[in-house]
Structure formats: C-alpha cells, structure tokens
Length: 334
Length: 204
Image (cartoon, rainbow over all chains, first blue to last red; front, side, top):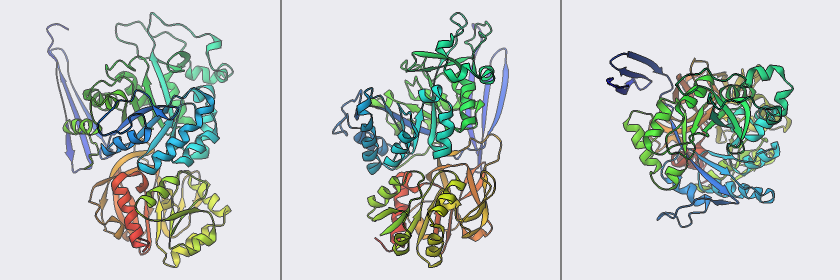
C-alpha cells in the first residue's frame, strides 16, 4: 500500500446520555468513507470477563502475587478479580478425570459465598443434571461446547428447562484457508448432521472459499480444544444455536488463541452481526488495545481474557480505564 | 428471619448468601407455613414466566405470597419475581401473573438490540425509596432478561433503565419492592440494597 496515507479517527458523541453516535472516518488517498452508526444500547456497559482455568479444584498457571495468599485457589482469584471490578467470571474446568469432576461444584459453592457477581462454568457439561448441580451450587450460567456439537437438541432441552439466560454456547472456530480446504469425511461429522439434509444445507461447509488474497470469511467449528474439525460453518452454527435457545455465544478463535495477537476481528464481527444474542470474544488478547478492537471492530458485547489478567500484566481496572478513555461504555467501580 | 421462595427455578443460593453476607438470616423454602410466619418474603427467579407461575401454583404458593403482601409484610421480588407481580405476560402466549400490580410484561422489540438484555446497566432514580438509601443515581446493576414490565400505575415506578428506550427497572409501593436487576449479582451496591431491605424489614 505504498504511497497511501491512512488516517483513522474514532470518537463517541454523547446524546443526552441516551444514545451515542459512533462516527468512524477513514480517509486515504483513494477512498474516503464515512460510517454513521447509531449505538442504541450504549448505556449497557461492555463487559470485561477474566477466565480462570481450573483443574481438579486448583487454578492452573497460577502466578504468585502479593495480594494472593494462595495463587492456586479459585476463590482467592475470584475475590481478587472482584476487587478489581471484573464484570463476570468464567471458570473453565479442564479436569480430565471423571471421578474428580465434582470438585468444581465445591469450587462454585465456595466462590458463591464470597463473590457476588455472575459466574459461568464451562467444560465437560454433558447432562441436564450436571447443569442443575452447578446452578444449585451458585453458578449463573453454564458454557457448553462439545456436547452441543454432539447433540444440538441438548441446548434446546437445557434452555427450555433452565431458561436461555443461563445457557452459553462456546464455539471454537478456525479460519478455512483456500489452499488447505478439504471436505470432511462422514466419520468426522457429528451423527445428527449426516442424517438431516436440511441441516447439512444449512450448516456444512461444502464449498471452498473463493480464491482471494484476503483472508477468507469462512470458519469451521472445532471441538476438543481445536483438535477435531467438524465440517460445520461457525457463523451458521452460532445462528442455529440461537434458534435452539442459547442465550449467549462465547466465541474463541483457535487461530488466535495463545498468540497474543488480538482477537480474530472478522470472525467476531461476522458472528456478532448474524445473531441477536450477546457475543463474548475470546482468544488472542495480548494488550488492552486488543480489547478495544474486539468491542469496536469485532462488535463484541463482552471481551474475555485469561493470560493478561492472570499473569498480572494488566488489572481489570486498568483495562476499563483504558476503554473508558477511548469512549467505550464500561462500568468503573470505586 | 426472611423467607426466600423456592419454586425449583434458578440460582437461589446467591440470594441466600447475599443476605447472609449483610447479616440477614434467611431460609430457602417452598413451605406455606414458613412464608406465613417469616418477617419478610423474597421472590427471586430466572427462567420462563409460564413455568414459574405453574410451579408456584402447583406448590400452592401463589395464595401465601399474595396474602403476605396484602397483610403488609415486606416483600422483595427479583427479576422474574418482579414480572410475576403483574397481571399478565405475553411470554409464550398470554399467561396470568399474581396480579398484585395492574400491567403487562412485554418483550424488547427494538431493532438491533441484543436479547437477552444481559450485563451491567445503570438505573435512573425517578422516585426514591428506602432500598435505594446510599445508592447513587445512575449506579450500575446486573441485568439478565428479555421481558420487562409496563405498570398501569406510573406512580409505582421507582427507577428506570435505558435499553433501546427507558423501561421500568424497579417498582415500589408501600411494603412491596421489586427489581428487574439482580442485587445478589451486583457486587457492593447490590449487597447494600439487600441490606437496606433487611433494615426495612426490621431484621437487622
């Protein structure tokens, strides 16, 4: 893009504290564009959500910190984030052993006694009783990934029984590249999908993306932490999950996860614009600008981050002050 | 002692623990007698209006709740516990509520709104009430809902919140308080509101 000057300016204007107009000016030597966008729900704060990996009742990757007596204790960590003004907490249970899976219930019970903010638990949820146990222990939402892919009707049943507001569907998505595109074999697809022509039409990725130099706007659903491709179009999958009763989407880019490069903004935006339920962006945060981009360009309703908070690179409060200074509505606590 | 009405829906533990934190003893119950003898009644709830009404009716609790309100017992409804106080809801076809207040429960309609309305939003106080003591105007509280109440009697509206347009986020009339937001999930300020309810009910 030699010879082109790119000037970009963004700001929010407050209109009677009721609505904001978000004006984005992009000027270049070749293109002058203006976007006017009315942000109705501007008083609803964008949420900052720290995520904690819990294994057999202990936080993994714990870092000793002066305010924490026990860096591995989930309750201590929850209290720590609570003090910083986190808007919600997500516990991701990565306990592998079946016998030890109930430990998370105890973690939730102890956390709910100390911390009075919304709590989501994800990982290994397979049954309605499993959800009920977590809700009874004091958790507000459950995040479901593999079980939704294996059996979408589970989402319908769970939403009917417990209400959409507590059913979060987690989607792990990976960009489909032209050169690497392959049609998935039947064994790789979930069983329910093979038997329904209608759902195949709706959900399967059957065409390679049109060749272009741009990154393709097509993403595939993966399970098992990004190891198993499912042949499903992630954006369509999000819509289908909404249809079945999901109340929120937790969207992780498997390409970006762990890179500290920022969210996959195209993916986040594509999903956020195709559903009418809130979308939480996840995967790839390395600095506070990434949070801003996820909200403004990715159009996420909430941003989730693990390592930047976990390794104490930033506090939640710093993140919120940064966003506030850039005109993003956030809740600042005293 | 206050009674938290249990009708098999949602996360009641947080409500109980929230009260405990501010020094109020409560009991989670689906017993008519305990509701009748408690000093105050709390009706929490998330989930579908129709299922909740059905559960309350099946457990024969509607009468106990309405009677305790009529007797002047302090009452706090939370989220669905606010909506249930109204005449009827349009959720999944029309459904009758407890009819303590005249009015309906309707769904957010505006284009471009994410539904459920989920997250932290601010409350604007239009009529101060004892539960809002020491809570500043425009304070943030946690919301999760897709429906909101339209009271016939505008005088009961205590706070409003903006989501697309202004909706009623808290009502108050005499002994009856009800919030659309979740004080038990709203950190410090939420606990303050629960404490104020304890003070109002004379249990602190």
